[in-house]
Image (cartoon, rainbow, N blue to C red; front, side):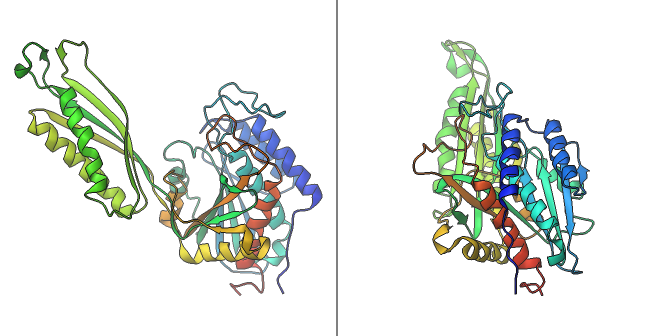
Length: 396
């Protein structure tokens, strides 16, 4: 018979104080030194051992007392955003221009609560749970760095879990998606080299602005004519600059943007197609194109078996009416995809929208959530782990 573990009123109050402290003291990516020390102080207060990883990361291994079993990882991101907060909360950010506008204060708090619950119930568990506080999710390469530092090794982690607070679902509902749940996000820069000249004699120059216009018109065909029409793809140019004067033929133009895809195959294809398109159009007009492509976050592709455990746990804990099967992936990105490329993983949503309060999207200066979501998140992670690792659970 499986035991059910729920957040106590005492722990619930502690979680609220933790979240409010984190929200009040946000730190940007890879600058989370105070955040790291605060996480460590809570773990020390609870007499829970931990290890540092990288400059600002922390992880905790909870070893079950029933011997060998699966090794489950849980990730929480801990960094904040360069946004001026406008929530007017009593615990609003004390740092001008820095804010927890993406719910990472909630993610960190939920993982701390999960650690408390699992550590004090480790007598129920087989296997191991590795709880990772990851810095730098809002910038490139953070998850990859932790993987290179061995966060999935010694011993090997078999699967990874993560949640994200989500203002597009009702408070306390769980959003589940099999397969791709977020897109990749890669940055590109197209440098077009033409030949400068006077606008009175345009035939003597090679107009980089004109070439840039043709590339801008052609880019949408990579979505409409070269990719599967039922597969979501985004190619967005967000910045264009070039030219020095109204009567001068511009010799250089720069286009900058992003590509997004929900399969690894299309992600790789877009890079090749965008490069080839830009080079051929530019060469046709006598210029030269240089395409610089920076791969950032891979898509988060949820493993079927791991996702099924999350779905079943959520239904049992919260009821079928609180579980929403997401119809389509978000074209936003999360570097949790780096973990999902290495081990079977799943990433799910936890709704925060309250009907009597205005809803603000992630990265909005007024984004916030009700602290009652914290206990739901802890109970959810705890039940997922217990389903897999508890003696008498599915792994036994």
